Image (cartoon, rainbow, N blue to C red; front, side, top):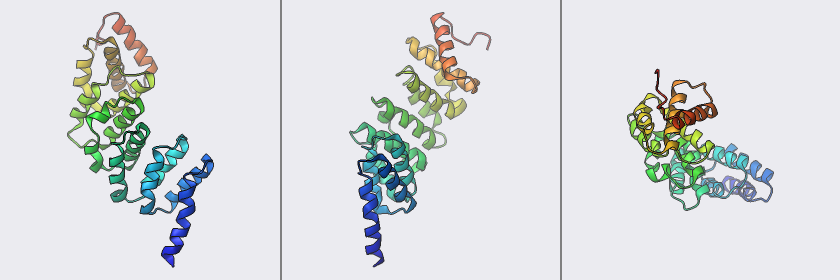
Length: 223
């Protein structure tokens, strides 16, 4: 009787996740998270890949974090290998919220350099959360290969990820400030500025770095 009642209660929530109204989908995601059931996990992960509304996706992620890690982790690790960019990005985001380092092997170099900017940004943020102690320098070296990539928002995400790793990033920053590509040099200099002065805004740091590079400087005069 109890099992039958649970099945009856679960059905509206699962159907609600596919409703045409975003407010209905939001309520459904909140309901699933409020009353976790391992049977919901696959549906939540599946919905993350196609949900168009940010605030609903965020609630889907929250609902997944409410379920047992033993159930969610395998499903999310599979999802980061999906051919769908949103599926990869959202699975990575959810892994960062769960924060279980068992997922670290899934954060591959391919994800950290994914052709889709949103996927790459999610991978950078997740990697910083999950990186095991002692592997920060190796992660910094991989992240540094992405200097100069994308527009301002993407560059800011990379800088934030690197700065979160702390002083271990100094060697890769110094190497990147001598790179042939002026975009790489400017991005590295801006990141170095943020590491040394966290209160400096990225916009100011990157514009100052561009001026330094344009004048042929290293940005270290007087340091």
